[in-house]
Image 1 (cartoon, one colour):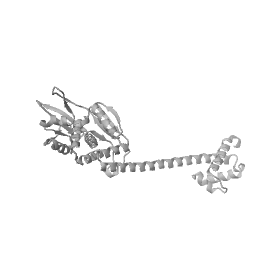
Image 2: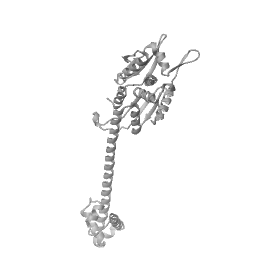
Image 3: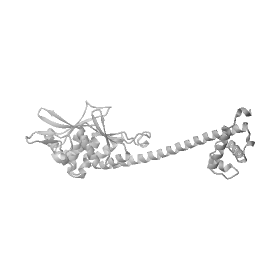
Image 4: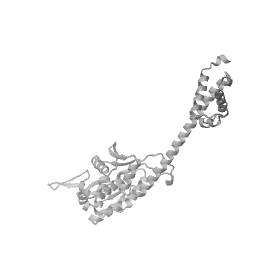
Amino acid sequence: MSFAREVKLEVLDNEIKNECCKLAFLSSVIHSIGELRKTGQDVYVQLKTDMKELFNVVNSCLASFYSCTSTIEKDEENNVNKTTRYIITFPKEITKRVLFDTGLMSYNFEDEYSLNYGISPHIFESECCKKTFIKGVFVSSSTSNILIGESKNHPRTFSGYHWEFDFVDERFADDFSTLLFSLGITHKKSKRKSLTILYIKEAEVVSDLFATVGAYKGLLELQNEMAVREVRNNINRQNNCLNANITKTVNASLKQISAISKIERTIGFEALPQNLRELCLVRLANPEESLDNLTKLLSTTITKSGINHQFNRLIKIANNIDEDKHT
């Protein structure tokens, strides 16, 4: 089971207690995955989802206000990538009431009705309704690539923290975007074919989203994954730095030994001052040592900067030697 599905199941498992929030939840799922169907004179709402567990939550909300429940069946025509999908059908006799109560339908003075594609402000009686509305969209229309490491039976991954909401209707997407921003959940917007996408890529913001929808177990797992990745990244950075320093030391040593060898076979060490002569011998005897360690092997006290300066003198001497005159 994917991490995204685990988090959605956790959200669905949290009971919606406030009556006002139940209408907000119904409104959000109908907006997100609802379709208005018509058979003759009958109009009814269908929800299409791969989250079978959504059925019980929807029925709990319907029972509270309308004393009836929806039905569920497998969607045999739209199973994608071997994922079982379901159709949740509202009773036709309450459909118009549900649409009106959830702000998706309104009447004009001629007693004609029209559909509202944006979010009706009256659906938010209090702050809790806003969070419940986000819960409904979260379980209905969100997807993610976040993978939690080895504890979930797959190898550690370098995938990011992408979480997105997919919308067919751009007006609803824009209203939902405003709602997210109002609760401090920053995100970006893009288009993908006919869909409008609102997406988050920062782990801290995904954490805020989880807290908003009440996915506290998922939040702890995410924060643990963030900590593990941070430790792993720090170790990798340290290893990369260490490897870079080793490479730098080896390259410098090779350059120094090349200069010393040229001096030895041409003018000889006797032509050098005592301090440089000793340095040549110490380096040849310890080709892999760092400058710090070489300072401890010399008979005189010298700093790392000082020994580096002496090597630069040796390299300059070697560069100025014309080998043809000494063969």
